[in-house]
Image (cartoon, rainbow, N blue to C red):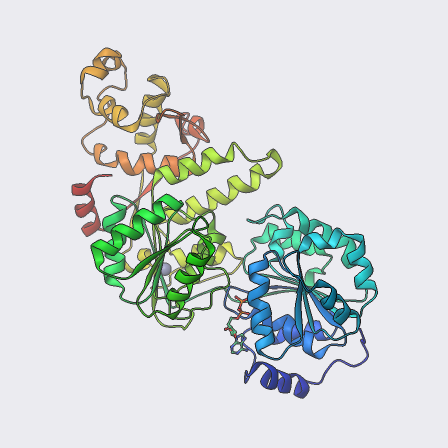
Length: 520
Ligand code: ADP
Ligand code: ZN
């Protein structure tokens, strides 16, 4: 690498145009490329679609030596490889899936490659280090850099092996790239990859053309059907499991008459590829998919993204909804959530290694915060990504139909004490009977009509019970038992003791009327 002569702005503009066909940079691309060309290590945090690839591909073409790109997925590498080669860039991958490894290594040593994509596990192999030593390297690009952090939503232990390798080439700049990183993860990436704090460049995360709506789920099929019918353009529906994907795809096709295809990791690769190609080419197709779908897909005119259940985290939500409206035209993101989604997610926390528990729990709490907020959704999202947005956006459900917040701490205490007094093993149906004073056989048999909480709810409080139970489950104060009952969890004891309060969001009037007919 030759620090003496960074390319001139004219030369950069010429490459941008001649190699990539672009007339200018977008957003922070210029800043990132400029740092890299001056040999400065950089962490670029840019949302999906902001054009991260260019920030290392352009330097790869301009710098002396090869740009070595670490990428976590072979499929992703091959996408990148194809588009780089289409621009006439000399690129190759070095993975276990490649049969031409010998040839690639020869070309690399001979200085005939602009770009070399590798998987992180290669970093620890001693013969790979020797290979790097025998070539000239201009830049290390670390894609999906959040994988290096245990705070990140997609930790890959192999990324931890990169540092010693990078340190063996102290004169080669590093460019870490990620679309999503909360402030813990950011700090971690800088530390783990040895990038100075002032080397962090954050692009704006706002996607003003996406309208966010988040609603409790009462009848998923009816709700999703309505989204599909309201939005004639192409759309993606994320469902939590393969079975749910298949089922939703089938019933939606019948119910709406639209072209609907499924996508999940359980389908044969050729079916997946076919369905994906059909979606990319289509102007009105609906794809029902697990989160396996979407990475590396370049379809600018997706008009809606719906979630049939909660995503894994706010990062996941942002990334998945971010697939809508890349062309800048109005698009919608609708999420339907249930208390059971959070219950399941909190149950899964018990399977997590202890050292990751805190960050995973925090991730879930942040998501519950987004889902339950009465404030602007966009503001909550952007604050999560470290921005200081306006209080309202005018383009989310809560801005369009402002909701009220009521303090329901008293009702919460009644519900929690009913859970406690009935032995923490009954479901909401039974608890509701006890609290509202319905003495059916089961209530009488267990003697629950004798409890102090029997019939304790006032007429005004009764209609709040479902929303309250949902909120308590989302925040973890109520957690499910193995047999479908509810038990106390999280801050339940603080609520009972009067040390913590509970509020729920009251939907706008029309909503309230409709929902009270439907039930949960
Ligand atoms: P990311 O990796 O950040 O999700 P990509 O690198 O895949 O984004 O780029 C997204 C899209 O934007 C691609 O279609 C790319 O060709 C396009 N793009 C990137 N930079 C520019 C630019 N400066 N001008 C015009 N289009 C661009
Ligand atoms: Zn808003």
